[in-house]
Length: 229
Length: 253
Image (cartoon, rainbow over all chains, first blue to last red; front, side, top):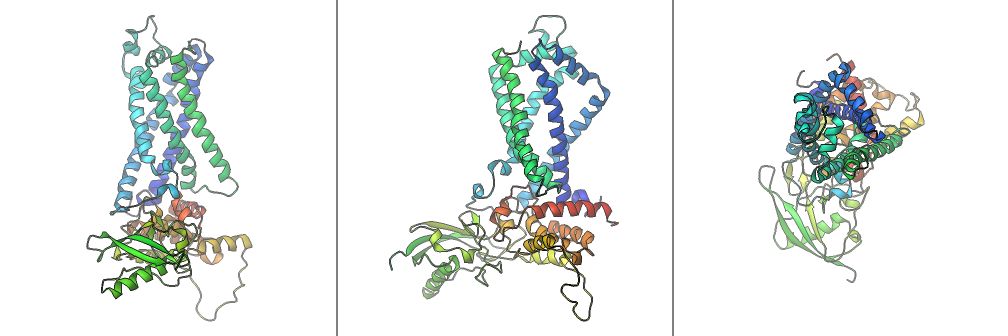
């Protein structure tokens, strides 16, 4: 890429943020759908079938690599953009009334993103690292009886702790606000702003930002309360 | 006179772009609510001159909301608390007797302070010079209606052309992004047949110049649209993004 190349330009960098953001949104849909299988409430049978599929299907495994690349790119671009934006205003305003012209969550996307990243690290150590790198969820085996320890067992074990459930729920609030700005913002960045369709996109964005985090938050809550056995 | 106000002003004083600035406090006494914000500054400055003190430097020209010079960041917002107005159109009735008003210059690396509240906005001129023009034949001027233009297109171009280049978008943006200004200028030409000839190269050149000038990156907070005295729409930014994506893809450079 030359110095004036697309990815070096402000719009190019924003484009990468938008496109990776939309990709991560598509991941949320899949993740949410598979996990929502616990609500079938059949002792995790359907859910474990879903996990089995996600863990063995080669397309999904390949997409896992793409997903991590997407997350890293999204974070990396965010850091670059934030540093540049700080440089663009060396002397800050003494009095800044941002709430008069923009929403707080649109101005605090970086903070919300950082909270989500911290959650992601916790979340990955809870489930992903366990299922991929340790011996068949061996850690869980100490706490739960039975020969075959499944992801559902692991879930029940993790969500038996109240602080964990609270952290998960609060993180979903961060995710909701991050999406509330990010969803429609990604379309604007890609140049998809149209008098006819933008109001629809914005409504979909609001619905998505509420429904998906709500479903995610319902999982630890339901398991903790014992609604799902 | 009854109904007149006494105000406390905290105004940014800075000798030039190389020195550090600081706030100075001034008392504005007997201010009529019918005065514009700039007229209030005139009164304060006259008083300062009479006292043998240095007046406050601020930009102003037309005083009727069309030149875009009056760059004042008032109480945390460009052009003060009202929407869709410049500082010269802001009246003192928007404030209460006894108020303290904080007045700062536009703050952006691309807008260095010339003195006090006056900033150098020639970065906008350089962006315009990079592509904000159309080619015309020499010789006699053609009949204005020679080229037919659909009315909705003409209206949309006109709305974008309402941009007065004041820089409030940059001042309002938490990232000091100039996207609203540049997109209005790109749009006004891209929407018309006369602007199609240079369309591909125009958006590339203008965005490149914008980046060179050190403006920040747009995060779609929408603060620019909310604070723009001419209510330029965010749709223009989307159009510029679109134009830029396509132009980058097809450009041979």
